[in-house]
Image 1 (tube, rainbow over the protein chains, first blue to last red):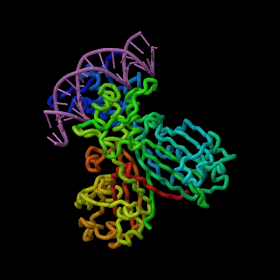
Image 2: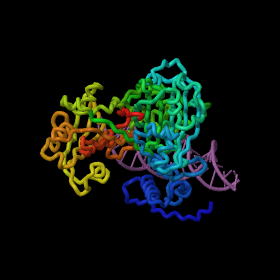
Image 3: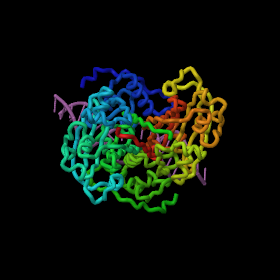
Length: 264
Length: 264
DNA sequence: CAGTGGTCTAGACCACGCT
DNA sequence: GCGTGGTCTAGACCACTGT
C-alpha cells in the first residue's frame, strides 16, 4: 500500500480527561459520522493509527473495539476494518401477510422490498424434517416426538443480511406440497397452505430483543454492540388450527415493527 | 479476602482449537448458567483467574469482556465483576389496554403485575407542558409550536426498574382533568380521557430495539451489554383523533410483547 | 510474499471502593 | 492500605487475505 492518503485526523489532547483510547475512538467516530470515511470504506490500518496517534497497539485496538461495540465498523481478519453500511430501515406493518399480497403471487418480503425500494434476496435456504423444540411443539400443538418440516433461510436487503427465519410446519400440512421444495412458488408457504385447504385466519407474534449469539453475529454480519429483534409468529387457519410457527431473528437497527389493536 | 472458595472450574484444553480466552469465557458462562455463580454474586477476581488458568492478565480480561458483551455480567470499578440479575419476564398482551380493565379502575401496569405476580411500583413521576418533538407532533397531528402535556414516569417490578414512559397529550384534552396531576386517579390517563368524551377506539404501536444511552443505563440500572425495546404507542378515539402518544423504553430481557392480527 | 487483524505475554501505573 | 478493575506499553507469534 502506498500511504498516499495523509490522515486528516486530530491527535490526542493530554489536557482532555478522557483516556487516549476514548479520544481516538471519538476522532474516528466523528470522521465516520461526517462521512470522511464512507460506508464500506476501509479505516486506516492499526499500524497507521499507531504512528498517527503515537500510542501502543493495544490502545488503538481498544479504540477500534469501541466502534465495533457500537456497530459502527466491522473488522475482517487479514483485510482491515470497514465502516458498516447501514441497511435501510424496514417498517413492517401488520398487514404484511394480507391475503391480497399472496393473491398477487408475492411473498411478504418482496412486498416490503418493493414498498421501501431496496433489492431483496433470500439465500441459505434449507429444508429438512426434525423434531420440534418444546416452544414450537407447544404452539403447533403437536407432540415433541413428531417430526415437523423445518424451512430455514436468510434475508438480505441490498446485499446486507438483515434477518434469519426458520419455519416449522406439521408434516401433515406440508407433505406433497412445494413447502418441502427449496422454491415454494408464488406467494410462498402461506399460499401453498391455503391451496391445500388451510385458509389462514390470524397470526400471533411474540416480540423480544436480546444480544445476538456469536453465531448470529457471523451469519447476520453485525458488530459486537448490535442487538437483534426476535419475532415468533404463529399462523392459524379458519378452524383455529396452528399451521406454522416462524422463528425470526432481525438486525434491530434495520427494523421497525408496526402493530394496531383495538381498545375494546 | 480469604480465598476459601476453591475455584471449581475446568482449565484450558490445549487440544481445543478455540483460543484460551474463548475457552475461559465458555467455562465462566457455563458456571453462570448452571447457577454455580448466583445472580448478583461476584465472579473470581482477575488475580484469581490468572492463577487458576495460568494465563496473562489481558487474556482473562478478554474472556470477561466476552461475557460483558453478552450482558451476562457487569463490572464495577474497584469492586468486582457481578453476575447480572435477571428480572422477571413480563408478557404484554395486546389486550392490556382493554376497557374492562379501566372500568375496574386499574391501570395497565397493575393489571399485568397482578397477573404475573410481582409487586409493581411507579416513581419519578413528573408532569409539565412543553413543545413536542417532530415525531410526536406528527402522530398527534398538532403543530410543533403548540405546547402539549408531558407525563414522565418510571416503572419497577419487585424493586427493579424495568421501563420508562413519557406520555404526550394535547393540552385541549388534558386541561382541567387529573391528567395534569401527579396522581391521575383510578384507571389512569385513558380513563380520564374517556370521561372527557374521548372514548378510545384503537392503538398503534411501533416497536424497535437498540442499545441504551448511558443515561438510560443509569435510570434502568442495566449493564453495558443489555439492549432496550422501544415502543411508541399512539391512542386514537372513536372519531380517529390521536389523543395520546406514549414513548416507552423497556429493559429488553424483561419483556415479551404479544400481538395478534388478522390474515385478511 | 507483504500487509492485515487476532491473540498473547509480562510487566507498569492509575482510579475506585472499602475498611 | 489493600484489593479491585481500568488503561497502557513494547514487544511476540499466529492466521487470514491479497498479489
